[in-house]
Image (cartoon, rainbow, N blue to C red; front, top):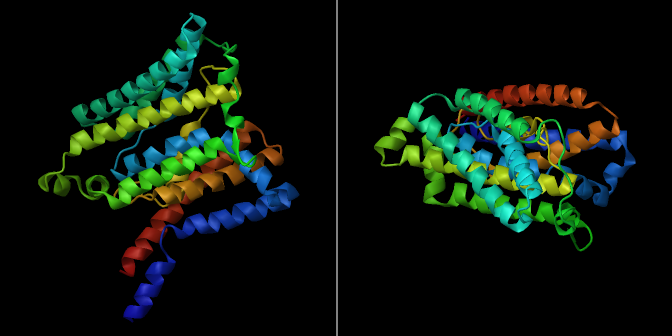
Amino acid sequence: MMKHRLKMNRMIRPELTVFVFMILSLVVGVLLSPNFLDIRFLLGSTIFYCELGLMAIPFTLLLTSGEIDLSIAANMSLVACLVAVLYQAGMSMPVLIVIGIAAGTLLGFFNGLLVTVTKLPSLVITIGIMSVYQGFSQVLVGDAAISGFPEWFIGLDQYTILGLIPLNLIILIVVALIFSFLLKKTVWGRKVTAIGLNRGTALYSGVAVEKTKVLLFTIQGTFCAIAGIMTMSRLQMAKYTIAGDGQMDVITMVLLGGTAFAGGRGSVLGTLAAFFIIVFIRTGMRLALLSNYAQMAILGLLLILVIIISNGLEKMAKKYE
């Protein structure tokens, strides 16, 4: 009986969802185009989504702590618009990169401070903040797209290792490994998980709950800024819609990767694996010539499906503990 329980518990882990979706997305991709069997094509496709992957890594830790930030795409857009406007005003791009990252970090810090001081759900707070940041972005640039950036800044996503692996993908993998180590192998990472499991217990155990949450929001803001600047380089322009609905992709990556929506369980490597699944799905939809609206609808349905499956597997796992 005990062996049966252990076997069932291993089989129904939430991480199983990642493996199933990866196989399905690859099969569908191959049916849509034989290019899906070309490793160069697949690796090249990742450059369009590495910025979202970078935001998903710290988002994994944030969600593990029981918090969420829906303003990440708006933060990313605001930083891009700010940098573009200041560049037009005559400031140098190297200085603006530093200013942009600092601005994104401050926006993240502000989010964390607002959540911890008001004691309101981060879901509610960041929905409001998202609208504020989107409004500021449009005030800065209007409906126009700002371009004309220096040559060295344009197309940074085109750099590769061994002429095959995009440099942006290498950066994403390195960042994922670092954050995975922090979450799973350090005292601080265990505190993050403890906060998500039970805030009260973590508080009584001496964990600086509020400070940790503010730090997580701040780190998230930093990576939103980096993602915004990388997207500017890739698209060679900045506008208030530059990030689109990127938060949808990020949330789907994190939940698909096995992180619990309610907090208390997180997997950075699972998020990294889910990043590739989203790349496969997005690339497949592009090959199928689906409109952006259709892609958004499919991604929304996928997000709902992932939440249902993840919650179902988690309940089954607890049943066989």
